[in-house]
Image (cartoon, rainbow, N blue to C red; front, side, top):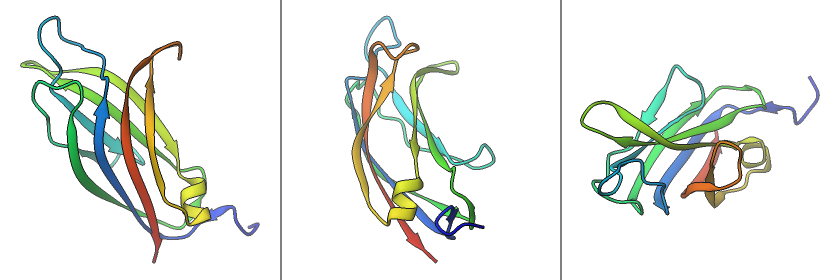
Length: 134
C-alpha cells in the first residue's frame, strides 16, 4: 500500500453549530429542522429538532470511530424537517474527510445544501470537524 492513501484509525468529532436560510418545506410557518449524519449507512446519528426555525442553532457534538483503511471516506449530512407524519428533506451534502484526516487539520466551514441541479441553495450548515488518530 502506498503511504498516504490509507486513513489511520481514530475518532472523528463533528460539531453541528447552526444552519442559516433553510428552505421552507412547510406551507405555513417555518421548519422544525434536524440533521442526520453518517459515514456509512450502518451507523447514523441524529441531532435534536429545533422547533419553528429556518436558522436553527444546535451546538451538538457527535463522534464517529474510524477504522484504518480506505481514504475515500465522506461525512454525509441530511437536513430534514420534522412533520406530524414523517419528515421532508430540506437538503443534503457531503464533506470529503481526506484532507481533515490525512492533513491533520480542522474543518470549520459553512457547508451549502445545494438544490437538485446545484443552481440554488437550500441553506447552509456550520460544522467543525476534527480528527484524532488513536
